Image (cartoon, rainbow, N blue to C red; front, side, top):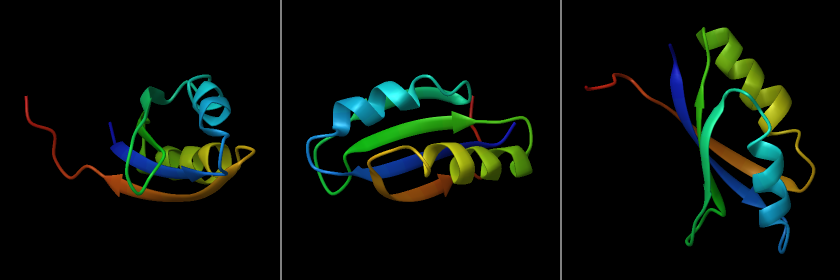
Length: 79
C-alpha cells in the first residue's frame, strides 16, 4: 500500500483547524503540528498510487486554509 508524508503550510493562525480537518480524512494515519519551514506533517496511506494522488490532490490540498504542500512518497518500507 502506497505511503506518503505530506508537509503542509497553512495560513497563519489556522494550524489547529487544518490539523482537525486532516484527522477526519480516513487515509490520514497520523498528523502533527511541527516547528520549522512547514506547519503540519501528515502520514497518508492508500490502497493504490492513484488513490494516494487523489487523496492528496482533492482532499488534503483542497482543505480550507492550506497554502501549499510537499508530498514525499515512500519508496520502500522497512519492518
